[in-house]
Length: 288
DNA sequence: AGTGTATCCTGCAGGC
DNA sequence: TGCCTGCAGGATACAC
Image (cartoon, rainbow, N blue to C red; front, top):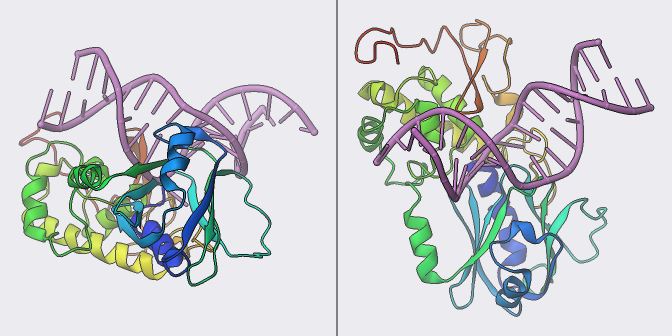
């Protein structure tokens, strides 16, 4: 998906028009993005007023009066678009759910969940369910509870490749494949390094790398490679600042060695073989 | 417990 | 032009 910076950008873009608005009507066009029958889903949203628009990891969280929440995981190609009344844009090509709004600072309009591949999921959670769901996710990487020392300790408990570890939302909430690769490059760590082999100084560099790349990407409204759009339909501009992701064969911006692409865990990993050397084999893990 | 694999979908780029 | 393959920002259920 959309990873943390993209979700954060969407949340910021939705806030003004959604807070205080009331959901007048819900149309479900593709019920496979829902976790419950369309009728029950619509029933639970209709006539509710939006109190807040928030983010948890890479999920958009819309909170209603009564404290129920709509949690939106955007999957690979999900978009949340707010179309204001009389919006001149052409209608979205792959709408899955449409909510007609009344009131709010922008006078209503339509909130559209748009998803070409339909890997995204929308669920309505009551306060208790929301707490349980949120507790299963790891710390917010931009929050105060995420510290280098804790990162280092958590890494030392896992043999999995550090790139895979970073993608596990139970470990850290919000990092996906793009920013995992970018953070590892900034930290000078090979993506396949077993998590427990990441030294304390390297974990500190990784901690800083994660926070820096996420913050800079938020400033640029995220990375639009293909599907991602802001709430207003715009594109994010962080793509031109990517140092390794999607850049196999291009020179590393730091040392000019060609960036390499490998595949493991069914995902591409991009890295600079010179800035991110693979740990010398032969000690703790002789042959993997 | 943690890791690898298959699966859910569609669209696009590139090779022939 | 058309067909085919590979690839894609994610998450989960399952077997081992």
